[in-house]
Length: 282
Image (cartoon, rainbow, N blue to C red):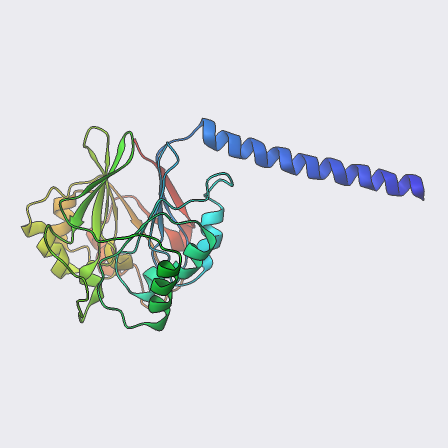
């Protein structure tokens, strides 16, 4: 019996060693093969997007409706780099901030960007109180900002526009106050367009602003709602690849068949069907 117990302990120790070695090799591979990555996290009916630069900066955009985002992030962030360098909340609707308080409690967060649009939600206010308690700096976006997050990776903020303040504003539709941005490479080429839940009203404003919206990759606005991703906007973007973030069998019918018809023939990946979706940015 003592010999049998010793044998089991030997097997267990080797199993643990093997697991640790696999984890170390996996993390080492992430360091050695570091690239600029864009991941659309599977968080159910909501948005959560992680941008990771090759120099180790982590940018999180939105969280989805609940704490599921923490589990999704744990699969993407290496154990030696758990910081969120910038946490962007596009607008204060639950399906975009519901996991925000879980994120800042779990992951050291260096700065938060939000529009300041009035929410009135107890959960959102609790999140802001946690941000204040941790003394996390809050940034407010303007359309004249370019944020460098790596040697060859930039965020070009498109909306809100330059000198436009949404701080304290009470609006009927928070969707049309969504922070919108382009991801660009080091030579200024547009890589991906992200517009939160912007609907046709904000899309028209973006078109009229005269800004360059063209991008090869576009996340469909408002989870594929028929009130977003209008024909004129899609034409201006000219994307060759699309992503949609929505929950499986969601009650809203996202992505809507009208939107699917507008992009028919173009590749579409969906978090409700494909889980988290990762792109290498070049």
